[in-house]
Image (cartoon, rainbow, N blue to C red; front, side):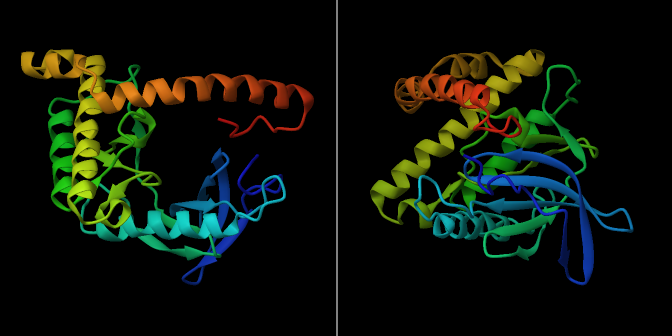
Amino acid sequence: MRALGREGLPETFELAGRTYRLTRSVKHDFVAATGFYQDSAGKRVVLKISRTVRFAGIPLRWMGKKVCRREMRFYQKLQDLPNVPKLMGQVGPTGFVHEYAEGRPLSKHKPVPDGFFQQLQELLEELHRRDIAYVDTNKPENILLGDDGRPHLIDFQISCDLETVGNWFIGRWILHLLQREDFYHVLKHKRRLRPDELSEEEREHAQRRSLLIRLHRIIFKPYFFVRRRLFRRLRASGRLLPEGSK
C-alpha cells in the first residue's frame, strides 16, 4: 500500500553538491513519503517522494510524477512568501526538496500567541488573491506555529488553482467554494485554541457547515470507515507495515 513499497525513503541524497542524511521518516502513505534530512553542517530539509511502485499490478509512477510536478508548482508560485518553505530542487523523477520550517504543528497542548489566527487569515487571503485554494486547513498538522511566532503552511498536495479547475466560470466558482472552506476550517481551529479571540460573527460562521462540507462527510465517512477496518486487518496479517499507514 505504501508509495515507495517496503524500501521506504533513501538513507541519503545529494542536491546542489551537498549530501543529506535521513534523520526521521515522517509519513509514508499511498500517495507519497516524507522525511526530514540533514547535511554535515546541520542544515535540515524536507524530502517528499510521490508514488513510484505499482498497485495491484498497475504502474503508477506516472501518477507520482504528476503529483510531484503539481505540488512543486504551488511552492514555486509562493516562493516570495516568508510563511511558505522555499523549494530547493527536485530529486529523482517523483521527489522534491523544500526548506525545513522551524516550528511545530497547531496543538491544544501548546499555547497559540495573540494575533496568530489573524495572520493566518491574512496569509490565506494572499493565496486567494493569487487564485489558489489551500484546501487542507482542516488538518492542524499542516499549519505550523513557527519559532518566529507566525503561521507557516506546508504540504500543498491537494491544493487547487485555476490550472487545476480551469479558468472559466464553473472553475472559478469551484475555486471560490474551496477558498471559503479554507476560512471555515481556520475558524474551527480558532474556536478550539483561541476562543477568546473569536468574534460573535466568526463563532456563528464556524458553526455553519456548508453544502460542500456536508457532501464531503456523506461521501467520505463510509470510505474512511471501510478503510480503517481494512487497514486493521492488513496490519494484523503482516501485509501492511504500521508506519505511515494512515
